[in-house]
Image (tube, rainbow, N blue to C red; front, side, top):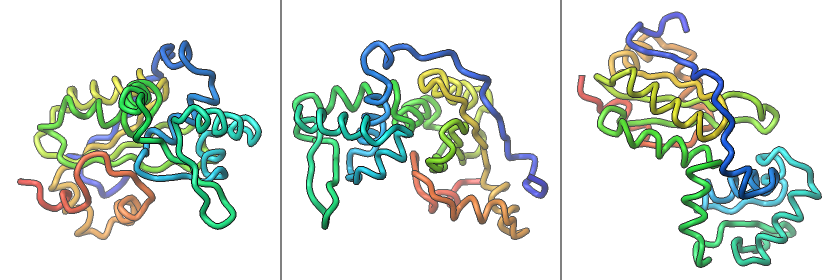
Length: 212
């Protein structure tokens, strides 16, 4: 990363062990559909989005959406000619299912829960949105905070990798490293801040309000 100061730490978790709880409870396609919808329950998705994000076939995803909607776990509404699907917050098992997805297969929720262990050290974090064409790529997490314990942060991210059964790549920035990179017009950091992302902790404003 060239000009990024040494205060920034980048690590990759080792390949995690296979998580089995979700496998025991749900078939693969249902896991992926639930992860898409219950990892972002505040928004709706049209079928093409679910298919792309779940990395599954059209027929299989359509059957899962139909079954989940029939069970009252999803709401369905039309936007133009397209059906939109959303996690049903009024379903009796919504809280339990959201928690289960978050603890097993929901990337954003799993990362958020793992970072709770180091909440006093990380004041901003986001997950870089993954292209549907790269389902095997590691989950990429950008963390921001001063005086963070690298070992504790690494353990937290390893915990997320173990739950997700996917590799997690994370980078830890400090206020000084962010400021230095921006002062030198780092194209890498500029692209990073402009990239599609989901904020897990804080917001972009927090990147520039850290105490040095």
